[in-house]
Length: 105
Length: 452
Image (cartoon, rainbow over all chains, first blue to last red; front, side, top):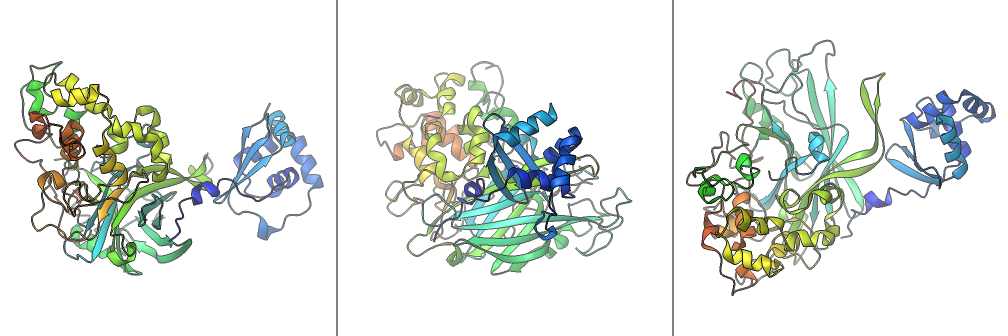
């Protein structure tokens, strides 16, 4: 019988791809955006407003109902984890990490 | 303690802190195995008004390895949901609770149970009821009856989740006071003026929260492999954020293991402080990296320092750097056939993994010995673990060299080893001892009566 306790590890690095644009758009428009993303918008209204103006409408059916938490693991390398539901999506995006750092600075 | 508050991080998270794990062939239903995983240590029975409950945000699991690779082949998963009937009262209950559906019970829990096997999950039950905590004679006048109502049979599994009496016994005060075992206190070095005496059961009159399952042996074993390895884990989601608007926490991300328990006392007594939290986060099949803690246990070297001259043979073995293959077998591989006798075995294979191993082909003992294999009882620890087994004495004596002759027949056990125990001459006081039927742990102590 195959074992299944590798599940914990495999879930930690989802193959799902998330773009910087979709992340920021989601943060700006989703009603239940996570702490990090919400803080970004609050700290830098100009950034949030810019993204809102250029954001296409989200499909409500594909918008997570719960919080979305963004964890910038390493700003220099752009290592970012996006947590939603019971999934984790890993990004490597130096530009996005830099924007987040500037937003909180 | 067995695994109560055994590591720095989990000691701050009692809801997810596994305290004891039991696995045994059910004495009253010998074609089944009973597994009990306890959580939330040292519950003061009167600890209201917010009495003890499982974490809605914790994933509790009982895992079974049935082919010896140290990986879970079957996992039972428990998720709890708390419901508040009336948010305007501070009370746990507004009148007597005489049935699990009573509306006088203001804050109650239910749970969902699924089993994961062969890569797929099957829901066994949803909305299964937990009993309330044992409040007192006015609030829970027939507690035993209430608890019995919470025993469910779903998908071939008998299951219970709720408060029970602590069955583990230990003299915490003496052990953590530089292993100053009261029966041996007069021989203790630094403060040898203490007189010897019987131990104090520090966990008596406390409660725990138990998750108990009883499953057919045929459902958890595979042909030709009667020995199973069992462990329990608790996991939390990766991110936890306090939301001041609601005063509650929100969670996101995959489940991450924060607590693990197989054999009693392994993380607590063997694993070094710097590795305890990491050990809790890893699966058993990664335990090879902790092998040195098992084969060169620090406590074995300390005994002859704390009790100078009392353990000369053990001291010589420690000085010689003897790798404790006996402890490696007990904790990490199981004991192969031919070591204790021709037929006794808990061996699962060469994979080093801390699991509580149970040979399901061994019938329950008619007259159990709390010393398990040291007492000649092949149905007791380390062949599984029953609620009454004196695992502290068994493991202390093993660490002190009692089991070393199993792998080195020339080794002579120090004479004092048979006196290494925290309870002598009297057995420990247990106000609500284990019972003979599911879920086997005693009725929890009531808040009205304890502390008395």
